[in-house]
Image 1 (cartoon, one colour):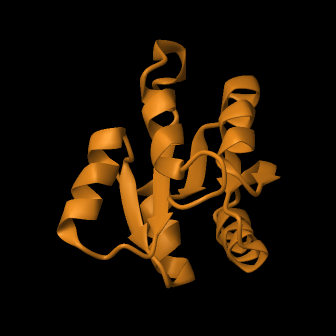
Image 2 (image 1 turned 60 degrees about the vertical axis):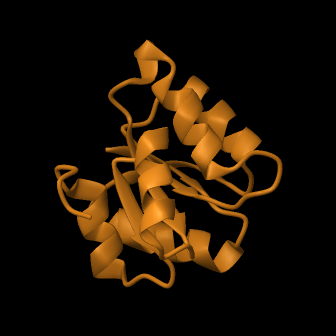
Length: 122
């Protein structure tokens, strides 16, 4: 599985990369903002994108919306990372197209589960 990781925090990107590689997946891009995440998704067509909600320029939420609005990108699994732990924020994330919503701080097993879950977990 090919994965794009997008987070403006270097440490979080490193943790996500560990989780991705432990699953046996390949990291095809690591970026620090939403615009670069969107560009990577369009050009690399990954199987999975792990996106921070709050990034400079373009939020992970907007990247989710844009990805879901393009039929040719429909099959990409989107995992949204955020510190917003309230139900309304989760509903906004899912409405934008996130398959999974992971609250920071997260554990590596929880992130791994979100990357491979069927979308029914919350």
